[in-house]
Length: 191
Image (cartoon, rainbow, N blue to C red; front, side, top):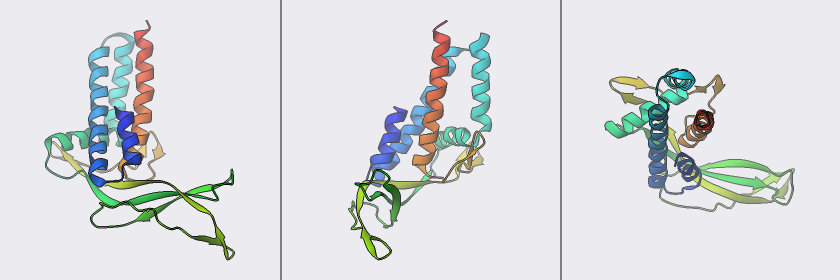
């Protein structure tokens, strides 16, 4: 479910769909943590491992933000993200195996349109071929409140910089972490 939500964040064109996908991701990640906690308990090797994961969730900016954004989404009245722009990913020189991708940011107020922009890139006065690969809406994360405490969008996860406070970026990193801990937890089930 969390992986599907990330795919929806990547591919949705309408802001309403992107907001639903972000909320779906937050709730799916919460569900994963809840199931792991119930399934692993607190004793033995798995209890020790689970304690370390809970500590990471509490101390890591990105994991903590996901938890508190979910709580704010579920129990609060404040918006947890704001509509920002349309991101159009383009491929420069699509026939070239070394073709480069780049993102264009197209802004609008309503956010309810889909465009296929005519992109013209020139290098040394010569037009370069450009292909629109994908379009998605950019949802920028806001500061959230949970139980009277404020949490800023994450800037770091496990010592690495988070490139931007955007729902897709955070969800993509989050789903990688969740996949890893699910894989580790499955090792306990083998014993």
